[in-house]
Length: 497
Image (cartoon, rainbow, N blue to C red; front, side, top):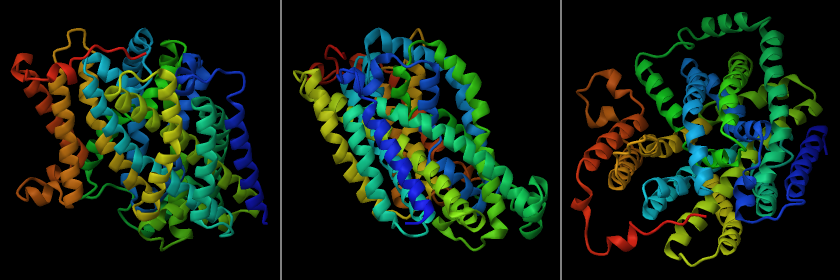
């Protein structure tokens, strides 16, 4: 066993130990398992939400896109800051309403606000479908990190199976408490490793950050700017807007809002998190530094840039530390995704069709669904070949379709109806699905449009369709949609407790 593998193994065991021990002294009912009894303070909520945000996408995808795409990678810096500004206004409202009605999932919020359990079912299904590529992203990253950092001693497949097994067990036992405690270790490690690598590697190979950019620009003129077509200025703006609006629409991020003690937690985080966003800048520096040092990484292999350069630079023990940090960036959000997906299916799908189900039975069903969802994600992980950022953007295209319905629900005079909200979500998701599955783009469908319009992100186009349909359908009076049997399916009395 080499030193790198030993270090990774120690941190895997530490994460598993913390995840399991987090249950100690707690009566693990559904509220404790999903939202920690709404008892987390500012520090835990900060670390937990950062744990969901700074993932293998941060660790590998950011550096991979800097290596393979150049200038367009800077969108990664921009969108988070806009999302944090939005959260200052939005998250306290969400938290207050959730506390008043004892909500436990994202779908609970939509179901209560629009008084429609079936809308909650729709939101649950969209959320789970969007979370699958997000979880696949974490698992692909986990396999890459452990395999590369162990110098090939552990195959990606074996690493993925080990990581999934550990996460599945501690999620089933401890729920969100396990995720929070492993997030503490993970956040300190990723902060230290990312900042160190982002400063040391440019200085070591180029003499500084500015000389690094000068060398990259000399070798690849125009690589550090936005191209005229494809990932152009219009693509950049639309992608930043899409991902900023969708930032808190991920079900596991949305649900973690409920775990806070008070609304002021989110205002503090909105001030601090943009500073934390600077961590991503150092990750991009690593990707740029790797361009001339480990050339010819093509396609999805660009995600290997950070690890390949680290292996060429450092001793095995430190490569193990880097690998351990990367391992935790997969495990923390992976655990939240598993728990959230299981809760959505058990509480907001199964219980809607079986309303007599007790809360304890819902909790048990959610626990049993964790390994099922893990196995489904493993299937897609071993079949897919997309880059990490491509997987993330695929999920964003879907989950951001929930934003209009959420946004309009926060108004005092709620003029959007449940029919409009549901129709908008369906229209947006259908647009994303059609364009993605058919392999077409805006330019293919409408070749006569200006290039700036052709380059718009597919998700933002779907969001525009969503918005138009939402408002148009909401303009009709509710009685227009009345039909036999609706009372039983859409207008039932809610008791989401």
